[in-house]
Amino acid sequence: MVQKRAAVLQVLRESEGHLQADEIYRRVKAYYPKMVLATVYNNLHALTEDGYIRHVKTASGADFYDKTPTPHEHALCASCGKLIDADLGDFGAMLRESADIPILSYDLILHTVCPDCRDGEPQKNI
Amino acid sequence: MVQKRAAVLQVLRESEGHLQADEIYRRVKAYYPKMVLATVYNNLHALTEDGYIRHVKTASGADFYDKTPTPHEHALCASCGKLIDADLGDFGAMLRESADIPILSYDLILHTVCPDCRDGEPQKNI
DNA sequence: TACTATTTTTAGAACAATTCTAAAAGGAGG
DNA sequence: CCTCCTTTTAGAATTGTTCTAAAAATAGTA
Image (cartoon, rainbow over all chains, first blue to last red; front, side, top):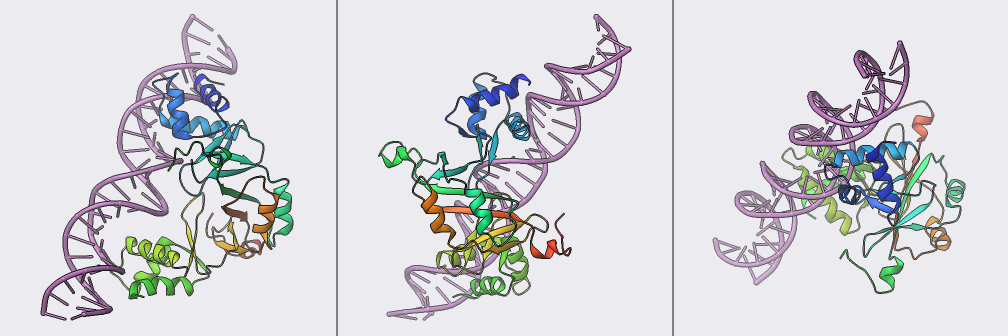
C-alpha cells in the first residue's frame, strides 16, 4: 500500500470511527501538505473496494467513511451531526423476513440524539 | 391553492406515485410552458410542509416525491431506477424496539429488482 | 540498472441536484 | 384601486463529488 493511501487509512483508524471526506482531507494534510481532495476520494474509493473501510452514504449532507468495514447500522445525531454506530441486532435478517420483495441491500440511517448531546455536552452543530 | 401548485400536485397524483423533481418539471411544463424548475421545488416544499405529499430522500441520485403522504417504506429498483412502495409490516415499531438508542426518525431505502424488471420487461436504466 | 507498464497523484474543470437571491408578477382584502 | 403578501421567475450560487488529462511515482522484469 502506497504512502498516501496508508495515511488516509491511518487517519480514519485513529479517529472516533466515522469521518467525512473533507475532514480526512484536513487531517491528512497535516502530514502531506500537498495532498489534494481528489486524492482523498481516490483512496477512499480504493480502500472501500478493498474492504478496509466502509462508505456510509447519507441522504442529506456529505457521506461518511467508517473505519469498521463489517456491516452494522448507523445513526446521525440531530444535535451535533456526528455519525455513531447503532446496534440493531440481526436487523438485516429481520428486514428480509418482513419484506414483501427481495432485498439486494439497503441504506438505513437512523436519526437520534447521541449520548454526549443527551448528557448536555457537545452540540457543536446547531 | 394557486394554479401552479395545484398542477404540481395533480401531475404527481396522476403519476405512478413517485417522481423526481425534474420529471415533475417536464410534465407540468406541458401545461405551463413558462414554468421554471425553482417553482417546482418551491411548490414541492410547500406541498410537503402542508402534508399533501411526501419527500423521499435518497443517498444516491435525485430525491423522489411521493403522492402518498402516509408513512411507508420504499425500494429502488436496481435495474430500472424506479422507486416502488415496500410493505414491511410495522417496521417502525420493530425498529424502535430492537435499537439501543432513541430513534427520532429514520431514512430507509431498500434496493431490489422491481416486479416489472424481474419479469423480463422494462430495464430502461442500464 | 534501465525500460516499460501500471498505478497514483495532481490541478482544475465539470457536474448534478438543489437552494438562494432579488426583482417582477399576481392575487386578495379593504 | 391601493397595499400587502404570496408566488413566480431568471439566473447565480452552493455543495459534495467525479472526471480528465497530464505528471509523477512505483513496480516488474530483463
